[in-house]
Length: 255
Image (cartoon, rainbow, N blue to C red; front, side, top):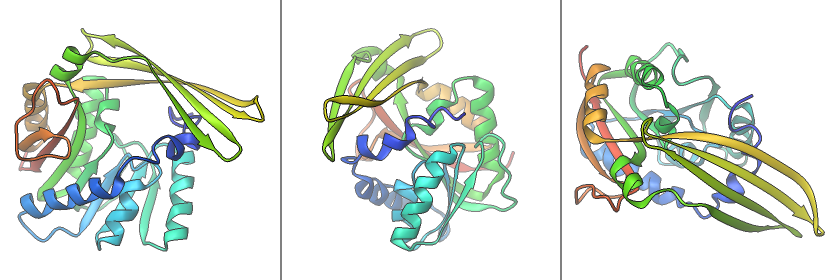
């Protein structure tokens, strides 16, 4: 079972306030800024429930989304049907999936690369991405910025969302592992209707955080050149320890 299969049913509920439209505008602006040719095809790695893919398709891009969670993809398929957009959705692991064609741009949004916690899987994901990109193609992804994680430290959190006649409560309990550059994030979800718990879900997601020189090394090793690293949703200033989320822009080069 995918790490997201229990959590997936509540994913869009928890992130309903996430500004996907602003993030897609940001991705579009980065493509316009850095793409050397007119980029129209995008590979969306770890597309999840399709929040970015559907909006990018509405902007005129040809989108193929890949995710290993069948539950997530089923939700994305329903969104595609309702919005009547042409998005190809493929179940697969971003480290190994073989689509048999190349793209102008690859994106991995909402810390997808952070799930590649071992060096071997991170390299495999990047090598497979490079295989699917045209020469000079762009790779855009976001992730947790290591200096900020170490400075701010992950904190326990509780989120309560009203849903219909009931509510959904999510408890988040992170455990920082400095030596492995990871945070083990344990989610406990309670779905309450009429003051009764009708479902509970327990999942643990181990997330990796990154440092600039580390990323520069692994990207160069796997066929990319770093074009920029920024605070997420920004391009006008450098990263600081106050920026938990970072954006990485890289270009495919000859191996």
